[in-house]
Amino acid sequence: MTKLTELLNIKHPIILAPMFLVTNIEMVKAALDNGISAAIPAMNFRNPNDITKAIQEIKQHIDKPFGINIIVNRSNTKLNAQIEACLVEPPAFIITSLGNPKTIIEKAHAKGIMVFCDVTDLKYAKKVEQVGADALIAVNSEAGGHAGCTPRNELIETLTKNCKIPVINAGGVSSSSDLRDVLKLGAAGTSIGTLFIASHECKVSDKYKNALINYGKNDIVLTRKLSGAPTTVINTDYVKSIGTKPNFLEYLINKNTGIKKFAKAILMRKGQNKLSNAAFKATYKTVWCASPAIENITELKSVKEIVEDLVGSL
Image (cartoon, rainbow, N blue to C red; front, side):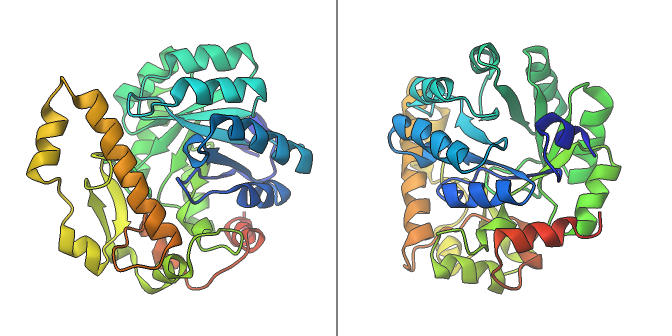
């Protein structure tokens, strides 16, 4: 038993990570059926009202804890509506990303919803702890999507030593031995994404899934071409051709404080469209998010089988 299993009353200390466009209701249900938790991004729903419906559907399937991931910075133009959708039909927890979570923590706690906050360093971890976060999602340099800059072990050790709330690892866990390692370091549990993209329940294209099998950890690169924030992707021929750094116009937009709020929203929407096309359409222009965990992906499996592999020797 770990702090995460106690906090969520689950069998295994794992959260199936909220991956933009990738994590779906079927994956969440399968995760809950097999003793772990899961979270789904609010941004996966075009209409915030669909968030409420999704929560209701999952609750009707099984009475187990799961969460909704919400981006809380200025790039998310649907933020308030997404928060309200969660308050109508409360999930067990909300995971906040990329912004100040103070307001959402206050509203969530009033409804009995826990809030876990993505953090990449101690400075921000202390800030969210002070405003009432229930746990930290420690996003390290091996995470998929918006990765951090600090190696897994160093980040866990720093946060567990200096913070009083549970630390949930994110990144660098793709086997049962990795899971044991982070638990020994003091992590309450771990959030895992990339492994579950290669599941039967995931609905991305076969091209995307095959890329997870055919590429390795050395093919993962950081790009700023999607949303302006560093994002880990597979270094396909297309990614190589467009480069990983913002072009001059993108750089100027990000540096102009007067239009930064609107620019971030535009750049994020542009990046989301690229990811959507890549995830569900087989084209040359592919930008597939993934982490170095692809090194351990050799075949497609069910969510059940992936969980069994991860917890088999615990």
